[in-house]
Image (cartoon, rainbow, N blue to C red):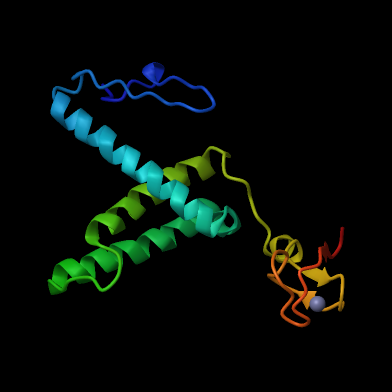
Length: 157
Ligand SMILES: [Zn+2]
């Protein structure tokens, strides 16, 4: 029997409840699992803020296999060498693996939007309304050519 009873997870737009009731045989382990799940959710939101949905949307779950392999190779290398990581901690790497696994399930269930590289890049090509320069990533802020802060027109719309 599953230790997570999906029928007890409430579905509403802003809140999901995990029932920690000891049905797995250990209230302590359930509680630790739930707290770590909260950490992984917080990490997911931070990373999405920075990456946006398209890196996952381009390759979906098969591409996540490659990303997870990078993480496993990183873990193997650090455990094998005993070295201290220069960048993200071992805990952060394990959290990334867990986050990727959940995102892969979202892809498999059709809950992650599919992206097309050409469409993604086209939506970010804008034209400065003052000097007419094509700006690949400057749809907000100043134009690199003339320095103006004028509204930019998105190409192809
Ligand atoms: Zn300009």
